[in-house]
Length: 638
Image 1 (cartoon, one colour):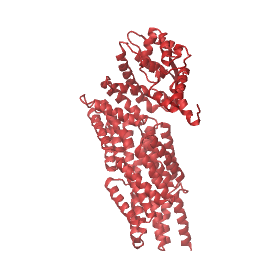
Image 2 (cartoon, rainbow, N blue to C red):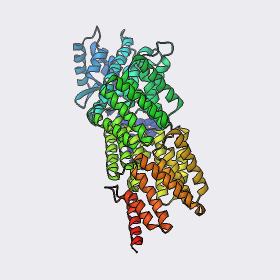
Image 3 (cartoon, rainbow, N blue to C red):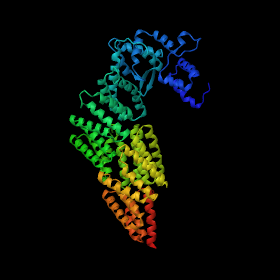
Image 4 (tube, rainbow, N blue to C red):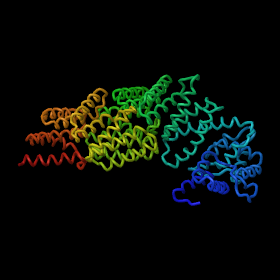
């Protein structure tokens, strides 16, 4: 049999599937001669085959793996057999605490169980492995398959699945409380090891002969854990199963509130802000309000604010955020107030109230620096950090903005939450693009595309492609960038992910100007300005007005109109307290004035704007302003 390097992972997978058991590997190797390596691996994935024949000269107990396990099983005492049969309810690793809670019963006490476990470990029927600070136990897959294939006559076998499901419901409740406080990968690995048993318990609860009542409680406890781990499709699936199972039962309980909220958030991450996600979040909020649950009301209102932002409803997003602040203020709960401040700050950021937004976000960040910071899978420190980074840039602090953006990405990486990292990667590159650091923007955009694709985070994937289009335009490939941006906007619109519309449409218009499609660029900017005024997306409005003026400059007969657009942009930039936008427009207007033979006026306009900045003189806009000022001063002196 000839194997090459490409076959090595398949061989490793077979050996791992068979737990390194020599006889099992030998029997599998004989099958390779008949079926080939890949088909043998596929057969093992479908079902461990215990009846494959070994050598004709082997002792009877080595003829098949089944015969070997029969022989080993008959050597066990009755208590050991009983404990081994009960351990087969576990999938993968389990703890001593779980084992005692599930296996112990009236007729088998803890002492008997512990004695049987010691013996089964000594006989290699149960394996051990330390994970973190705790020892974990596991039945070999071959052993578990054998046990599940035997006729189990234990009269309490029906109770095993119930005890197993109830134990992992309690485990999920505790894990949900602890997860945000776990800072290292080793600490979180211990929790991840138990997820297979949570999944198995859910499968049983909602399967034939299961207990949906337990399943509802288990899903409500497990969904926040799955969401915190960014296991979004699983969170969605089990939340949906449990909500369906609620039909005909009492509605409006805390379990339903939790299930609806997690269903809505998982759906929003995977598919954008859909009608189904909104309905789930609205239902969760109604239950929280009926039950007087302040923290849940604030958290869900904040999530609804984010939902509306993503759907392009910026005024409604601010309304939800302010409702959250009102509820939090009435309860005097610091944690709820920080959630509300985060929501209000982010909503104000998008409507262009930069000073107020920064105050709210900094207050929230101060709270999250010493408190648990995750709610419904969202790490608020990440959301706040992104808002502060973008706000610092627009308020004239480009260096501090880049530092904050990088720190936020590091925070997201340390959270080990794929959704949080996707959010950070989806927004932080803006700062690098604005600063002219295209290499950093490209590196983060590439990472976003790969990350979003591997975790099925649809909206973020297309944002990553949007950045690629922006970078293409900035580097001179305007036609390719325009095509890419159009594709990004099309896919985002199909997912109701409208939060990037204003920004990406402005950049698309710049690409259209670069390929001399002036009329289409003007129509696009006019439509973008109209929509932004209607929905409250005013963060980019000064930039939209500037680009509208640039579009007019491409039509030489209407130069005076360009000055009007530029002055509107300057006025709004100053009202918003956005010197970064003001500088861009001042550069364009100063160049226009200089071209008319008014270098003194141009210098008088640009110099005071430029001198507001105390950092980042090497960034793209400030460097361009410096060069223009130098040329204007030279013309003035001459």
